[in-house]
Length: 399
Image 1: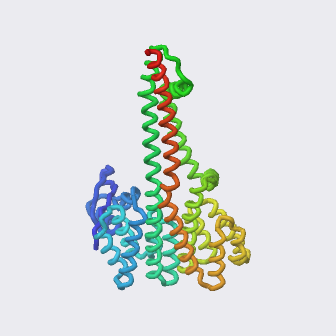
Image 2: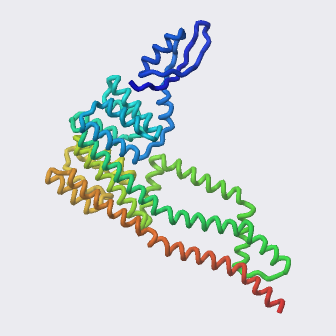
Image 3: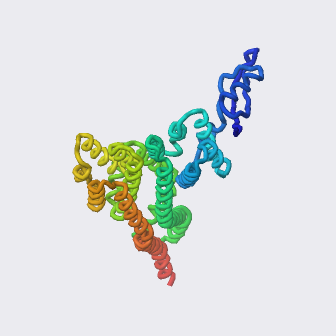
């Protein structure tokens, strides 16, 4: 049996509290070993549980683990032995600790769902509920393979979107830093030089010097305001009401709207198809898919559809009130309901919008680059005119 490290707090015969670490195969065994040393244990905690609180496990890690878990189950290897084999070969300490803990709980008599549920933060609600349905229907291997494929595709899509957005973010950040440097260090020197020479300043120069003086004098407040705005945005994103408002505003941006909609529909249909295939009820599948979409607008539509289906409505009828889903997705889901093969149609929709989002993100530089070039040229032109016009006037006076 794999030995785990446990931290304990105990009281000796004199009533003095002591702390220590001991190795054992389970918590009960650790309790007995501490008791055998002549002290009374009052708390025994696995260091695995402590490390899990600081876990950083991403979609790729969970996807790889799920693939391995499915292969071992398909090979009919005992679950506990298989999980410990995966954990021993895992290089990431946080995930290794989670897998060891899941194996320990299964060995103690808990189900796979109950064991994974203890680490819901790492696996996610969709993963836990899908495993629960698969364990109930006895379709664990097929569901694990589908889960791994879903997580893998979601990871690749997220990576493509982040990679596409990195270029404009870096360029805009560099531009802001350059302009800030000019405003704080360069422009004030030119302003002092022009003032000492008594040169009449043109309007562009006056505006630039005024902006520079404002930034130079009030930069701590400006920086604090930017930080406060960022903190407020993060706080608002965690509040359902503000998140819905922010999401609604983001969907008004033309190019961004298509990317967000494509990502949301891809996640919605992917989770919806997986849930239906796993044996989860239609209403629960709609709820899970709406939550997985990451978009409050689609989540609100999913809740409305759940309420109407619960009152006896057909999915094809209630989808007409779902404004977020485009006509293509609604037609395909209706066809899937009529053909009694919803999961297959969901896979078709997912592939379609995955390709669309990938195409949009690959062409993001084509859309944003002209805007950045025009903006950069405009800023350079304004700064150049503001600096060189007074210098031209000085040269004219000298002649």
